[in-house]
Image (cartoon, rainbow, N blue to C red; front, side):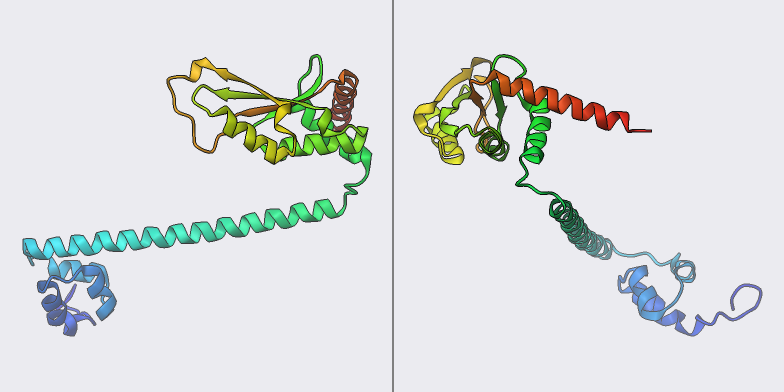
Amino acid sequence: MYGWGVISKWYELKDKAIKLRSKGKSIGSIELKLGIPRSTLSGWFKNIQLTDVQKEKLKAKMLSALVKSRRKAILWHNSQKELHLQEAERQADLVLKGINTKNKNVVELALSLLYLGEGSKNGTTSLGNSNPLILNFFIASIKSVYGIDKNSARCELHLRSDQDEVQVINFWSKELQIPKEKFIYTKDKRTIKSATYPNYMGVCVVRFNKIAIMRRLMFLSQKFCNIISATDP
């Protein structure tokens, strides 16, 4: 009987459910197998005591299921991340299709904005970074806009105390396609007690002895920022 004298539609499966539980099956697996609500099963099983061995097996299965669930979640998250990255790249390509990257005014504007954030504001036209992509853009833009060849540049490496200067010079010389004799370096003695990450190749400063270019880039970037800021309602 069930409730107020009403026979549960699951009652005929009660003995089978109890036998499964007594064998150490989890409530969840019985629920799936027989289609009986968990609330009904919990009432039927309240007096059934599982052995320690059965409890350990259920615990192991639960942990295994949790690991599999987490793996699936990670795979799903990574797939979603990849989709978002692909969409971001697609949008970036659409923007670039609408820009004439061979237009020197466009290149100089992009260079000026980079310089406003990363470039030296005193003495010479120079920019330091640990990313070869940034420095190659800087060098290529200087040549494209002003006709100044990279071989007129001087390169200064700012290294940590435990870095091999020969290895680092070889790296930057290859990345920037600038002769090794164009490089000098300094080491930061304050880093002597800490190890450097294997892939870190210091900061390379590419310096052109052209203060007029620095001034022009600073005026251009600041004026452009002011124009955009003034249009914001």
